[in-house]
Length: 130
Image (tube, one colour):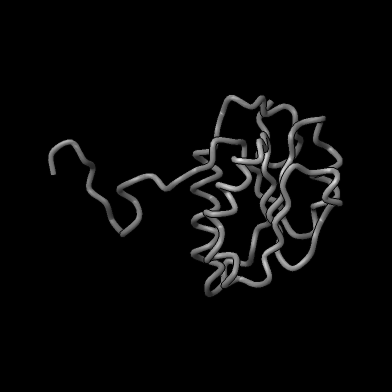
């Protein structure tokens, strides 16, 4: 249609919801590094299966019980983190298999569109720009 580029598959036409905060995707074995290398900011975490930091260190912490819980409650967790005043939200990556493919698609889209006003140099890692 006029004014809209053609799309090759569903989900490409409209942007997905992204929280108004900086979102950083974290490998499951990199929590310690990610949290230690963050300067004092209002932090939040969404993880799978286990808490990765004490709740006193975070404004928001959500532990998903399994991939189904993750998929079902991801966007409500984004809203909760925003409401809590989180500036940087660390979100655990999941394997890109089965339901994990859809979850990672949502996470990657939200991370790309997340708030850019947070200075990225406050966090070191693969997604940080100098």
